[in-house]
Image 1 (cartoon, one colour):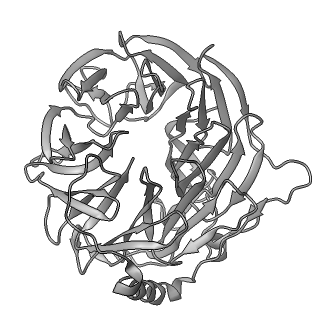
Image 2 (cartoon, one colour):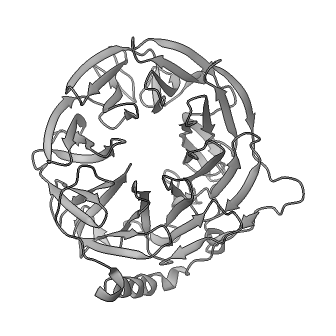
Image 3 (tube, one colour):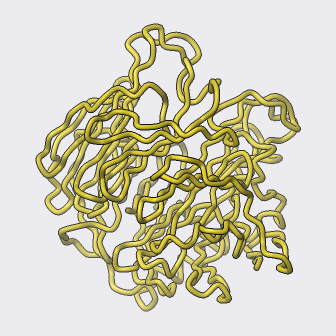
Length: 487
């Protein structure tokens, strides 16, 4: 089955946003207001940069309440939540160099900083679901060279932080670059997409990418499963509008029982399945509809002149993959970009949705496809999927002027009933982050007003809490450019 979504045209976007927000912020429709309070765990955290401020505020969110936490000593730029919701790991910059420099862990029920860890890679974190433990791979260089080279040779160090004992340690050196860290459900193994190169960060990948299996007791690499059908990292390619450096970032997800790994390709619509017991590729396939079903229809992005991201003509492609709680389905989406004539270095259309694909995990048969969705989240019970898309279109825009913004609003789909139609909430409101709490509430963040650099011209962001049926429970505007992070 294929579905196309409709959204407001570009010229109607500003009026649609203003109308929806004026409705949603009235007491009769917005539900109970946000209130102060603490909880044993949080469903989400919000990093909020107030008007004109360089450093973020941290808000822990549970239900419809927020609790402000003090992180004034840290220049935070990213965050992740532990599976229990008790801790947040914050990636911080050095204030002088603005380079990533520290990982800071905050206990959310008290706001207490548990500690900090100096690291050049504070954002590459994986949490264990078997306990309050996180892992990260540091990419270290003692003497930087030109164009991503390291004169002393790059080192990749696997580190761990046990939050129950508040102890950190080095497990082992990893002899390759990593992406997409995932800890096995039993907490014994770490899986990551791996590659080798003498240059930084995926430039000029040498040889074939692979899935690495690392033993977390010793830190040693157990196996490297070759992935010859996968493209990863940055390569110089000849595209329709010239020669560009194209970045491809595949996505990795594990089956709930830890038996398989699923890899969503960034160069095409392929899926690779790896047996984690035998450490062997089972199959690589491009999911298709069963015979007799309709092909995909054109979506709202195409109707406004921004084509669906097809991993052929843009500068980056970053898919997202989620496995259902029962392991029977895969949910795949993502974002890409498009190049334009006369713009030889940068993409002119950013955030182009790859569309949502729902796939049978065993057969890799395509069950449903919906264009116009880029970021997705799945409810804890696996019954409801939420999706968003925000496209920045720079075609015809003068240099230095803001791009035109196209937004899908918030899309809710009952995936336990694929015959049900998706529900579009606040079409045109630029929700660009979405997630679920453990109680099934939906948290969505939107940049609702223009900004200059990091300074807001008005209330720049909106946090919305909804139930799984799409009823708005609460809205909160914040005066900074905000980042919403859910578990």
